[in-house]
Image (cartoon, rainbow, N blue to C red):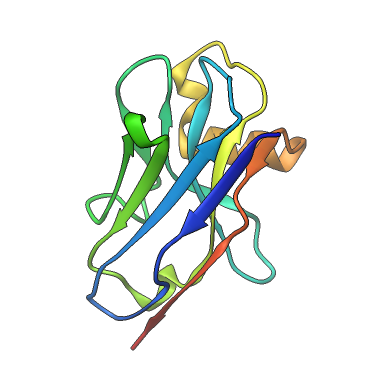
Length: 136
């Protein structure tokens, strides 16, 4: 079965950095969105950093632009989220994600649109979640 296994240290002081990783196995999807979501209690699970597997280019939520970077190591089947200049408001549960089905355009991977699709009908594979806590 498809598995997305996350790892990484999840506690840091404000201004610090963390890197999360997501090792993917059993996944054969093509032309799909992959990336990272986060969720805090009482709020929706929202995409923060994404990419489209069919071409280059990455997408970021406004709240993390300039601070977070998504990347991948294809040889290791691993997706990373580098988080710099962390703020207390970045505190959340972070989830690696991949579409279960192909999408027609990279635009659908943009964080706001992918979040909307998840809200309307979850069609993702998910990592187990990693708690990230940024202290003041």
